[in-house]
Image (cartoon, rainbow, N blue to C red; front, side, top):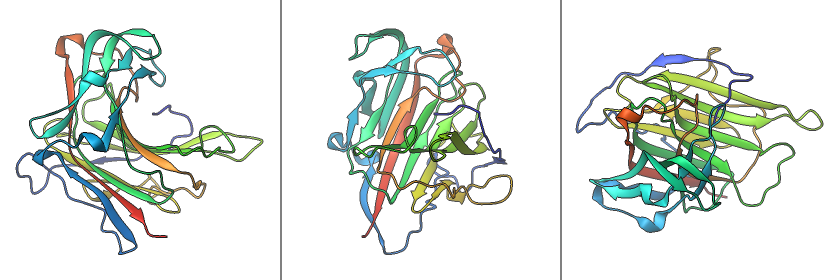
Length: 269
C-alpha cells in the first residue's frame, strides 16, 4: 500500500491490443529455464480452494480512514473467476473490531521465496473509493534491519481516479537512518474495469514490474528495479483497500474484482 513520500513518477497510457473474449492479457514473463512454473491456476476452468486462504481481520487504509474489515465470505468463485467483493455491510473482524464496510482478501498458499515471479490476470473495478491491490509481502520469519523490509505492490488501483494504476517497490535504508523509500510507476488504463489485464512482477536481485507484457519504467527510463533490493522471503497477497484512500461511493456498491488466472514461478537453486 502506498503513501506518497520519496516518489518517482512515470505515466503511460495503456490501450487494449488484440482484444478477444474481454482480454488484453499477454504474458511478459518469458523466463529462462532456471525458472520453474509451479502455480498455473486458470479459474475459468474451476475453483482451486486449496490454492488460497482468505483473510479475516481489520484492514487499514494508507493515508485515509480505516473503514473496512476483510470478510471471508467476500472471497468466492463465480462465473469462471475468483471474485472479491466490497460492500457496505457492518462487519466484525476476527480481532473484534466492527467496521461499516466488508472487503475481501486472500493469500496464495505457496512457499515464500527470495527469487519469485508472479503474473495475475485481473478485472478491476471502477467504483470510486475502492482500491484493490496485489503484492509480494514479507513472510517466513525474516527480521529486516528496518521497518518491514521490502514490499512489491505489482498491482494497486487508485481509489479516486478511474483507470489509474500504480506499481510500487518499498524498501528501507540501512540503520541507523532507517528511512522508508519507494519507487513507483503510474499507468492510465482506460479499460481497467472492462477487460482483463495482466500485472506481473519478477523479484530476482531486484524488482521488475510488467503490465500486459510491457516492462514498466521510471521517468529516467530505467527499469523498475532498485539498487537497494533486499533479499527477503516473500508471499503473494491480494486485498481491497489501499491506495489514495477515499470514502466509497455507496450508491455504486457492491464493487467486485475478478481474478482469472494466477501464475507463480520459482528459480532453481
